[in-house]
Image (cartoon, rainbow, N blue to C red):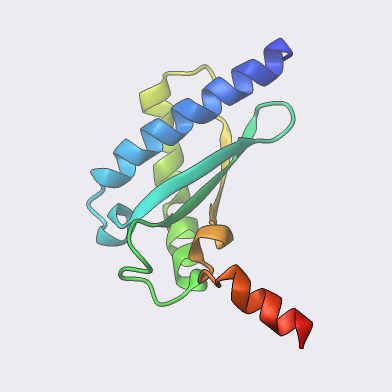
Length: 118
């Protein structure tokens, strides 16, 4: 693995860990309901996509759009908290998104197979 890719993976892990701490201690009850599901680096390592989902079902949230509105409102706060915690020369840009794979209701495979055979 190339040096840049290793650094991106390490930084993605650090970002996930630090954001978990920030979310857990947030004064906003909606933020404290969220958990980081994964962090993916984009090329160049200056931007990371952070996927978040409610810790339990949808919790306080009624929809995916409501989660995205909370993330949009809190993006500056989360980035500044991350910058303080990581002590990097440049804090990476974050794209905060609701994780659709976690939020979609699970459908048993047998149900899908039955529908396809009909």
